[in-house]
Length: 134
Image (cartoon, rainbow, N blue to C red; front, side, top):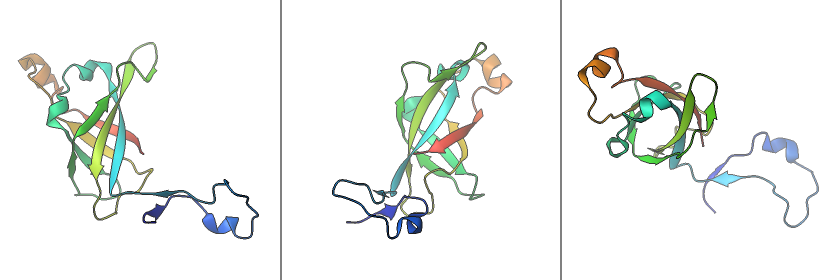
């Protein structure tokens, strides 16, 4: 079996009794991760899903990784009175294994054709926070 142990504080489970079927620890393949981004509905119309995304992990200044957009939610995931947020999943290559589940960062999406006024307002290159990595 190959992968990375994802269970926190595994050493605290030493000596615990377990029976067949119990989960001792979780092992995951982190060569590719999915970044979950909550995108404001006002920006959703400008998103060009074919253009992919540029990911900048907070823990690694200067590192930029490009990845394709995997899915865009059909309906809002979170919302309030003023705005709705849609879940966008971006596939993030992690061949060197330096990215870990739970890390945060920034993402920049490609945009389709945008009216000049919107472009001047800054809609083309908005930077959004990644809520968490999965």
